[in-house]
Amino acid sequence: MKAAEIRKPTQKEKRVVEAITGGKKSYGIYHKCCFHLHTPASYDYTLLSEWNADQYKAMPAQVILEKCIERHVVINTIILDDVKVDGELGCYDNQKELLSYLLLADSLLSAGLEVVLIADHNTIRGIDKLKAAIKWVQRIKRYNTFPLVMLGVEISCADRNHVVGMFDDTTENRKA
Image (cartoon, rainbow, N blue to C red; front, side, top):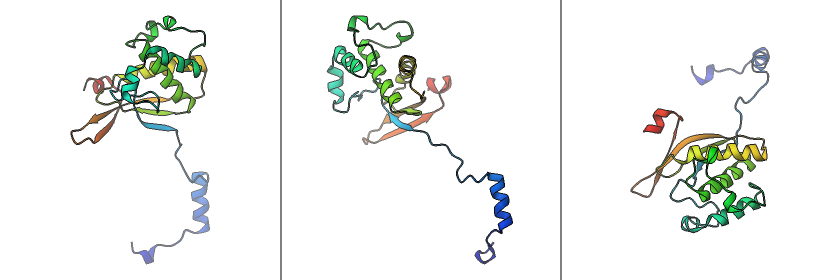
């Protein structure tokens, strides 16, 4: 069809289109997303923006607990000996990791994120831990959102660039 053959729609055609679409101009729904999130499973995780990865690794669990108390992720009368890595929170390696995931989950929930893509370096070990932490914090603090946590990975390449992959969270993809 040549440009000269294209004509403007008639008023009747416009009314028909509007009746069909209901006058909608857009059909998408916006969601607040984070498409590159590291968890404590990633070797370069920092927890707080003012820390680097080495500072986070050297940080004792007590400091992380104090941050959790400040954010009201745990009750202010809790002591480190009360933090148990068992039961539904038994997937964590230690108290520091558990508290770090709880603090991360609280940050995501308080920000109202609806979709989160985990992009840890060369591992997918953090996804189930983050899901468990979100579930626990959501139950305690009753946020209005419950984010979809998506399976991803960031692959470190020899040229210092990185490739981020996003995958369906299936048993088959977790094996690969």
